Image (cartoon, rainbow, N blue to C red; front, side):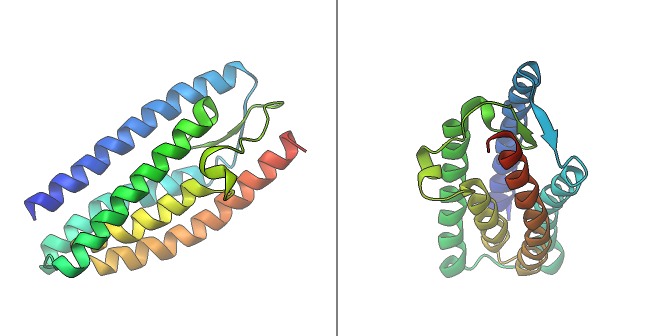
Amino acid sequence: MSAYLILIGLVVLERLAELAVARRNLAWARLKGGVEYGRRHYPWIVTAHVALLGAAPAEVWLLGRPFLPALGWPMLAIVLLAQALRWWCITTLGRQWNTRVVVVPGLPLVTGGPYRWMRHPNYVAVVAEGLALPLVHTAWLTALVFTAVNAVLLAIRITVEDAALASCNP
């Protein structure tokens, strides 16, 4: 359990780093005339991700979920790959990356890095991590609930993001 708490702590630190990058990029985007879309769904996304990071270790502790190596190690590998994909997206988008939907009018759509092959690679990382992180220590209820909630939120988020990008980059 202590190794799992360390993993959760490392993910929390990674999320804080993301928020620092997002805050800096948001300030830059606003200076460049950036427009934010979908403000109403953003607090729900934050709540879901915070709940994931709290619920997974809570489930392990409260329900005595064991570490099963045959499940845990592959799920850890997926978590690590999701982090790599997430940071590939962040570095590829540069100042245009954000945890919010912010579009700077006139900037071209990014088509490099993982965006060569898919439109929303960061959300692939989010889905993979949301499923795998709890399953590292068999917190299957958390994985199931987060995945269901996240599916609804991502459907909203992708719709908002696609509309925002289309309105600023026809």
